[in-house]
Length: 618
Image 1 (cartoon, rainbow, N blue to C red):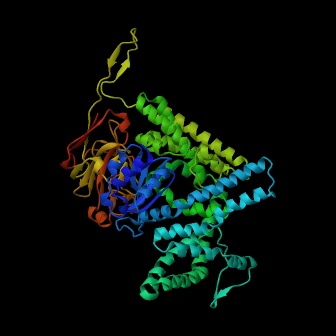
Image 2 (spheres, one colour):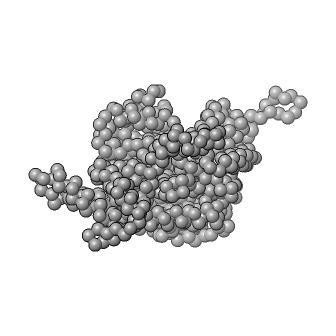
Image 3 (cartoon, one colour):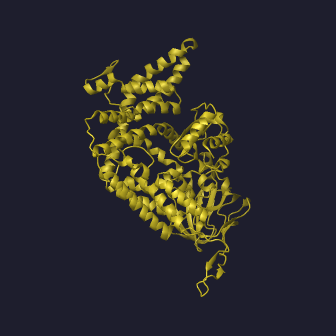
């Protein structure tokens, strides 16, 4: 399917161009906010040829396309006039709204930062091969690259205004004010400056991040105020004039220095971690990057990354760990491709492995690693090990870009060993992930009626493997049984975490669905992990996004390592209070080691009582 046809099908299923409030894209995904979310058919979008997956994450609808996503995004824009609205969705949770703001502000400027960083990397290579730093060619290319960083406040002003809802050109003007040569000269001179008797702190705002975002945030409210008090006959010139006259002094005197201070604190903390425990952050990022990407939480680090780039010219927070993690996704996919006997899955895993090594991990993540819990764990362990080495060696990333083998130049800088250590960390992660996946992570799912070669004299003789023992899983709560596909969370609906059923609870009592061991009670108490005496590993997940409650409204009656009998009370939760706080209380019951069994046979939807059959494990 070509870009036009793909864009056309997506546009129809999101409710048309008139339903799109905001539209942009990152390296692999279309990201859009919709005015009326009831008009989107997410399930049908997933079925479109050319769409790798779709979900609602961090307050946005994300449609995974792959590396052609920019072309599809352009086609969608051509098909209709998208009147972008910045009105917030009242149903969006605060954390999701914050992630959405970060993504919408920083994503549009990443190409400029990437281009600037790549030019810097090319210049470093050229110098290594003999280019003179005093030559005019070097100087011109150098200031071309510097422009991408120096004028970052202007670019962020525009994207912030588009997201927060004020005039983007007034916002750009505010960015220009912070970078104006006259003010820059005052800063370099260092003589005290005051405005109407109030001191103006002399701050160099070139390459800064937070001050301009605070400025635009203030401008949103001031512009509304100016619009309200400006008479209609003179509103055309009075509204923008009042806005700038009010905002500019407040920013120069208060918000600008405050934002600069916050940026300094972020840079100081980052510098402390890099100097004292340099291994810690890359190790954690390498290990948990798949989960961060899956939940959209990786966007929360963007302000830190941008501050680090503008302060030091590099970052060590996400780049090294995400590089190793992406390589580990590829290693796991290649290992699965070699081990599986399913020809179609072998081809899918091989293709996903190649794209993951290049930095595009969605095909590997959604198509391979998340389907098998032990494979995902292998990826996380390999990523953590490679990230640990990268941190110890002080590996840094000099510009934004999707970390992968093709984008290794973003790790090239003044220290020639930086990219070498980056490669070694990738090799460590790849090898550990591959070995763990081969011996521990992936087991070929058996099918009913499968055959194996007879080891007797006749090598061609075959014999049937007997069917697995049936294991009944009973409902842990009173309520109404529903299929997982009806759960609003993509992880459960797509059976990424495993197969099972969900229950709309009638009360707040969770009981043991079988005899077995309590493997874990999650810190926030919304998840209980169990293992039956037959070896079935079960996850009982109480509610959607209830991790955000930090254990509030939950009371655990068991602890890790406890042995329980079917019907024993495991957990109590305040159903009404959780729902009043804006959270769903549906209880997915998932077999997390689904791959070890032939199938999960679910019962019919309808009423169920605690202790009644829920589904059968074969």
